[in-house]
Length: 473
Image 1 (cartoon, rainbow, N blue to C red):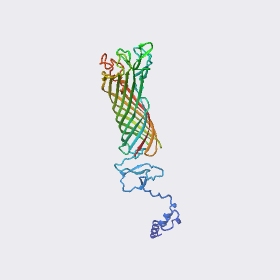
Image 2 (image 1 turned 90 degrees about the vertical axis):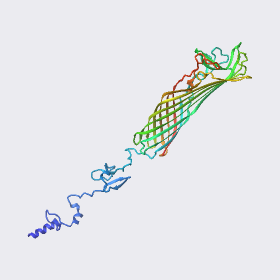
Image 3 (image 1 turned 60 degrees about the vertical axis):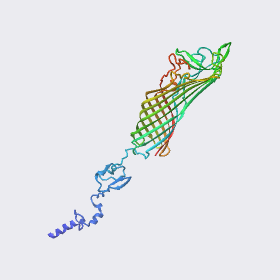
Image 4 (image 1 turned 180 degrees about the horizontal axis):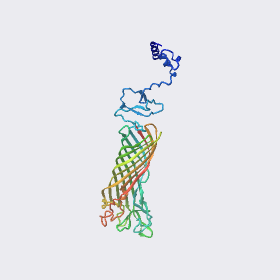
């Protein structure tokens, strides 16, 4: 073959002209369209074109512009098997622009930023102790200490026990808000009021049986003031001589209220549970009153006794008001299911109890045909202890609460629960009574100057169940 023939064969091979199948070991020649239409005859498959890169924005896939700077794309592992994954095995996700908060992993904040709740309370508070205030003895009982606490014939009608111990109704209100959409920091405030409870006692007699007000002398002996009495020793022979008739009334009240406000900071949270710190201020107020009143009329006609028909009105009044102010810390948390929740709170406050005690007494004597006179002092409230007393003491007030409820709607839920509140140092009205007397009005103070102000303190608690509703928006 001449030079021109070899050149023609080489050009034909380069241009794909001719039938390579007819040439053993040769390359099949043909048009480019034929080679492209039969790729299966090639010794390998051509790789598919790479898929376009995608990003996920608001749950929709969009193409990544090729001009996006690399710093705006973060590569993460695929979210699912169906995710489009580019070469390299990672899925590009567009990051949030500056200033946009990203949700914490495993926690989806709600749109509720404010809440308001109201609770019905059915609580019991620790009762107030009162000493023996009214006693009774059978008609004809005798002895220098008749009606006194050491006389075997004496029985106590009122006192030497705790009073105001029944359950009572109350109301609690709670509100608050979060300062940020992720519910990291907020404010929480609550207030409660436990309805006033009263206890009343009245006894009256013409002397059968006998009524008395017991006390002790400076020497420690038991004595009593007569309220209604028939004296068997005046005439003798079993005749009961009338001395005095009357009635005695005891009225006692107590009421409790308080509020607190706390900064609330998240400590831990996930899909079903969260725990928050509480830092704040607590206020509590406990007020007691105790009044004893006697209305007497003389029935004796003896010249040494007050004129027949003379009346005596005797009043003793004791009142205490305790106010607590203190710094508070605590923890509160909640566990939630699909339709139910469990909420708990524990708080403790350290601060000062400011205590105010008022003691007052008065005796009014009215003599028929002559007139009336008023004296300072009753029986247990006299010039030696009448006054206004102020005291301050360090105190601790812990509280725990538990609630269980369910969601009525996404914004409304109902619940029931239990609370316990403790107060370490308070003054109760009944504890400020001194049963030791140096004199009886209108006799001026003498001896040891009793009764005195004991400045007695005790601890206090209140607990009970609750039922409420809470609205979030």
